[in-house]
Length: 341
Image 1 (cartoon, helix red, strand yellow):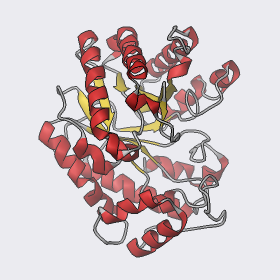
Image 2 (tube, one colour):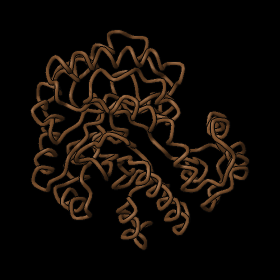
Image 3 (tube, helix red, strand yellow):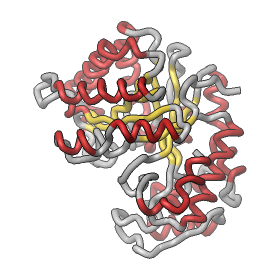
Image 4 (cartoon, helix red, strand yellow):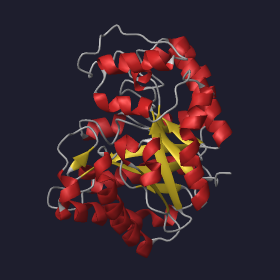
């Protein structure tokens, strides 16, 4: 049985607030407000995952920017008021973000130093909140070939954080965009306050159907769920980059449904059980162009697989970013969606 991640069973991401956005005071002050945190609490969720960028905390010279920390401070106060826990997720660090092919971070020690130094500052400022806050080291290392380099960098950061706080739970994911297949490439945890994480948007051809940013993807492409394995693979080969075919090589041919997801998660679950640490899904969701009934079917399958596997999670995402649960596209099914988180 998986070790429980206490206080973090069902959550939601605040994507687009402090990361993947145009940073300005107006945006930071209006995109997410106290009423949003109150709403999330009223939905019965127990935590939020907050993606953040390095450069709202530090300038190019490594000098501290107060505004970024003040925003985190404010969010922590809101969470305390509405009885929510929080994950601080470094979505973009100096020299790296998951959607940029240029990744000097993994070969530049100076950039790695900045990464470790920021986490040390987070630890000094927020270590006292370990009962209601978790640290997530870095979002979605892309290249599987960087797995060992990432393990080295993460180990250094964890060692320095642990000099400051022994009790803070530290979340770490593997390569290939936090693939569930790469949990096995993570090093053994240094203590019981570690958490392994993965993301799941499988099959991508369903969850990202008609995505306007995918070159060659028809704007009217539609796919239902559950989806036949061969059909999904055929469309994946036709419309997505070849790297997405790897999913089909690593899984058994079957109808992609609840039982399929349970089998998909099984190896990662067994690894977490071996080390007696929690396993957490930090992102999952469906683009706002998918048919509503099929969206519900996918969420239902994921919900059952998570529940039966004992995996806590946070849906992507609360607002905007083409996946926002409070946006108009989901209005007709929002209540049912929230029940399936």
